[in-house]
Length: 152
Ligand SMILES: [Cu+2]
Image (cartoon, rainbow, N blue to C red; front, side):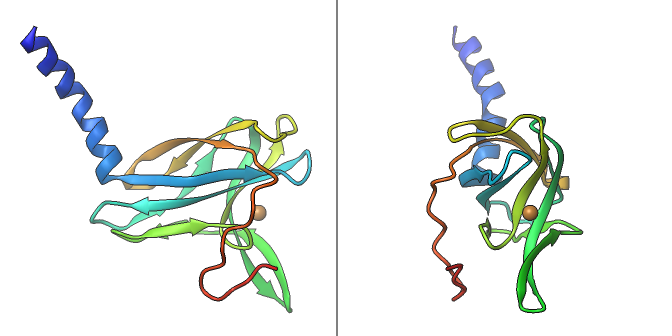
């Protein structure tokens, strides 16, 4: 009996350790402004002592998933694809937020409405992959702007 308990503990420990020492994702949600596209937002915490990079995201919910960001072009904020991924520094965090970096889902297999769950697989390259269920919430209030940038 004791032996069996130890065996189960041994199996469970690596996953528990990963959740604690690895990458943790919080405050994730998605929005969908039209039947074809949706965007997902979240905070990625890096509890490891090495820098990690979000290199890509995949989902069965859409034909194409890309990492996007916004930048000002000719005085207008435009979104475009990120080449090379999003860095999450060791011991730090990175916020994917409206008006900034986001996960873009294009060519939705079916239109999404509030409460729908979108399953994402986040690829952190050598730091591994993370499964994430994101709930669609079009009424969600925007994140508080941090570095003096205001989205309103
Ligand atoms: Cu986008």
